[in-house]
Length: 183
Image 1 (cartoon, rainbow, N blue to C red):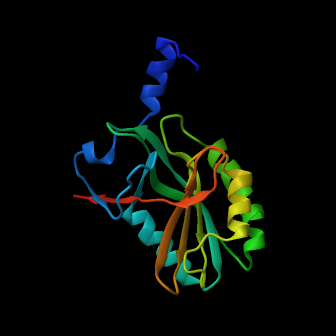
Image 2 (image 1 turned 60 degrees about the vertical axis):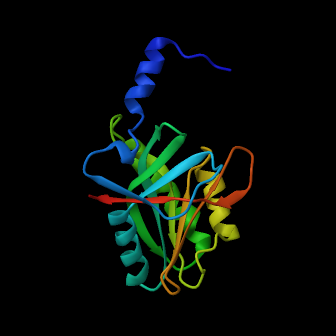
């Protein structure tokens, strides 16, 4: 086990976020119970609404990098999805990697140490029933190698939404999540 110096612990604590439940002005609604899930996921409703609009807009697939932050609450760690960057429309899911790679690089290059970071990926996939497919998994495994980084899949045709994640050295699972909005 790695032990952090007090200075390193303080720097880490500065970067971790406060759980949305403890943030004045925010309302959290759990859509699914997380049970023994190791990490909680929080999706901000304005982000989901924008991604839903974008996925209906063109009729093609679309993809974006999810941004947000990491934190530790009283019960467990969590990931907040508070934004997205570089949404692109594509004709085939085979294009996911080629679209998401430069988007990830751009977010990382302009990252503010106190601001949002890359937390996962979004795919708008008409006709998918919001199911993670092989090409989505391949792009995720290549670009998002931090455990629990989510894949948010939205099918505008069936109005289905799924959040998938994976732990260290494990397979993808459908993750429980909560939505966050202004109180």
